[in-house]
Length: 270
Image (cartoon, rainbow, N blue to C red; front, top):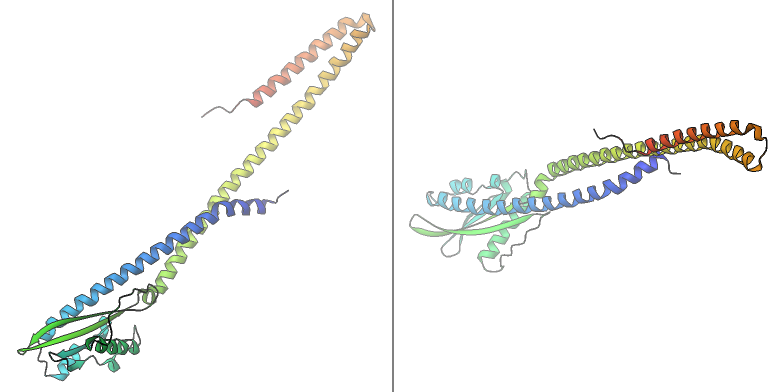
């Protein structure tokens, strides 16, 4: 016979595990969708910031290196940029050595600048691949005109939603998973309580039927004995007594049968 713990565990495994598996699958899907959405927003952010940077540079004196250095300090936007003149000569670039590297290492920005130069020289083709759980780089360029001369600003941005928000995402996921687990345990416990009540009702039903069956045996034995005396024509002067006893015990049997019928009736609906 299975113990109560085994019964509860079996109920939870049958009801809880599928729910937890489904929850994990849904959470993974939403996580993927969230990270992709954040990456798309970052791509749009880099493009918008690149356009704004071009507009700002058009209003600057591009011969002022100190002013250019401040303008191209784009770490707060997770970006770096290189300014070229119309002949492809480098005028200025973001000073990545001065970046503090709070969110991303300075090496990320330096790699972006190296790639920007290769893209500008035509040594490399831009390839856009979204790495949901890794770093992604977005590149772009804008034409601008300042001081009567044409320039091109090449810019790049780094984004890594998973690396930036992993702590919060994991904490939220664990909280949701724990809540769902607690819910499945509660549902399993409720089912287990129903099982216990059903088991108790079945036991009470069996006991009641058992008791009624035993009660029915006594009058049946009496009737059987007196009936045999009638058949053997023994002690005929007691025939009236036998008949009365048979009638009385038949009444008892009828009463027991009535109890059994009442017991078998469904409960009244509330």
